[in-house]
Length: 164
Image 1: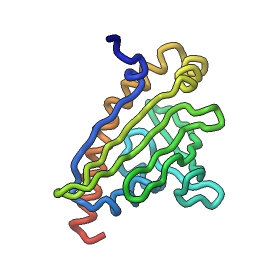
Image 2 (image 1 turned 45 degrees about the vertical axis):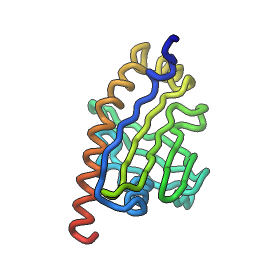
Image 3 (image 1 turned 90 degrees about the vertical axis):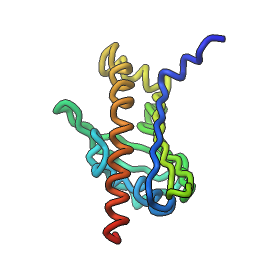
């Protein structure tokens, strides 16, 4: 049986974190905090009074290799404290879908981050950033997700230890 070609455009990784799912959800669903742990995203803001409900929009400020850009994302799933997911560039038909799944464990929580570049996103990247852009973005996500998860763990556990 042939491997699903869509699999190459998806990547997930998980980490155990010694905080309760509710605390972790509140962290990862706040675009203002993303800059504390992401190697690319420097943070974001809710648009038009959004607060993290399905359909709310937020901006993200990003930097990579001295290139800066802003994205608009739409919340797709806001299932406190289990899942927070969003679609990047909904106005373009969606470039990528990102999500955090939070599972309770005896240790605290298991956090899974998932990235999926959609076909419309691959087409947009090739057209606007060059033929190798989708593959470069995939490599960046595969390196960045484990780094992001480790940083979330560090921040969350440090805040829990300090009573934040």
